Length: 240
Image (tube, rainbow, N blue to C red):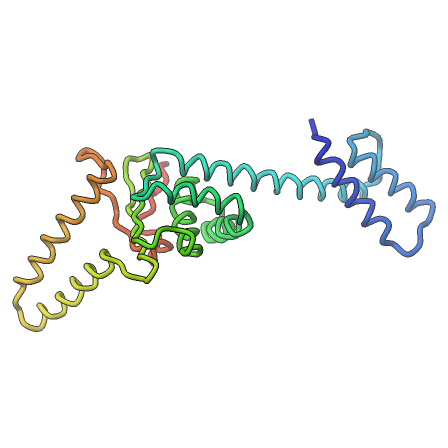
């Protein structure tokens, strides 16, 4: 059943479009009457053009409703055990942002749906969009570094590292140091320092995996710098 709140704006929009015409013939009046009847759920046999116009309006409202449902799904996902953060205020701020800036949330969603031709799961979608929401509204969150994890249904997961408010990132610095030492080891042939860095990285990975509740029997989580969140090599492949 169509709600009254959806009927009245639809009828108003159709009437505004009909009234914008400079001259009105008897045929136009009949079509306008048909439009109002269709918008308000009155059955009959309106003209084909009338049905198309009413159907377009209905689709517009259905799209808005779908967006509302998606935002609600995102908030439910944020509160779930699939989504964890080091600072619990991040969850509340994210939900506030989605409520206040729904247009920004849906813009990011649309970008990913188009990038993946609509073939992207909800958990993968939120794993990309939620960190982006944090980065785009960094001043709304804690000044410290933010770490978050997303667990997928196949028992895999990702841990995302977001720099502090000044752009500093422990994870990013560690990875850069390792890359620099790789180049140095290639030149000198001495891999001692590189080995020590890999040991440090191993301890770092183990500590964060444990902190976010990843079990030894789970698939090891993929560590992702937020600047690489769009590089979807971490994304679980769909099961066929």
